Length: 442
Image (cartoon, rainbow, N blue to C red; front, top):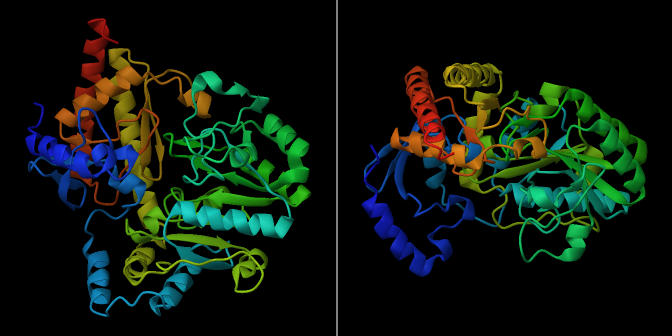
């Protein structure tokens, strides 16, 4: 049965009068109105109408332990009593940096900022200063924040992509500086030959190659190890800074992130999300030669009033030890695979061409029989069937992202009981899809 969301509807009317779209991030907008939430615990969230949902958004993958984890909340509560001095360096940041580097052993030094967008901007400043070049290359369909420098060809219009030999650089938003957009070289993800050819052609102008080792903002599309190794080889050959965007892969694929999982080491990497179980923090890490360039002097500035904020650092100090030994990552991998198989087993007898792709607690459904290996294959998913499926899940009390090219996430709090509830919801969702098809509504 659909939930009563009258209070969300009323709150949206109020919100729309004071907040554009009634939400503070466009990804939260929904038709006819977004749900508004009041509290969360573990794998569950409750909206203002009192409806309870199982959460598969989980802070866009940031909440790895579960909402309101007591260990994290206790650490935050302790630091609240210190007065939260802002504008000076807090002692806890030193301990968290040490914890971070003990886990991410491929990196030499780390500095903290607030968002993944900020961390990536810092990374690009370092790369440009170190190389004396301006250009940036990134994969088609990958998202690295909303800055002019990288918000390019993220969720691009499939009718405007160009050829795989020369993908077109498309602005990810109105208002971006055209020179910034045109300075970005778009690469065909997982296509070694074409990627190599494009980088070779433009190597003289490239400061950095950015890659998300798994394209998670459009679902779950892993790079092949061969592809990442090829990027490492060609960047080394041409003196290009290789940057891994580990905002979503960091601490989930393995304690050391994608670098540990794939055994490929970049020059710089950005982190966030799971680092503090959802509290706002990000990090730039890398080799000492590059990271020392951000020290005071004539190099790239690294500044921010809220960098290393005591609350977020305290949350990270409680979270990182729980991510260190690999047991949490193994648990998430097993649970993700269980959900993937359950979905496949439910879809097959209904004759539905659909797949659940996932790993490390990240997952997404694609309503297509096409093998998913890049943005263009992911974009073949049937948006109408996805919408039908998501609506049915919502009626079962499952909260998921409404964009067919988005991603979902589970946490340590998604235990046996939660998994069983999700599996039942999968059946309901797929039956709704089958009924829609048979009624000619697909």
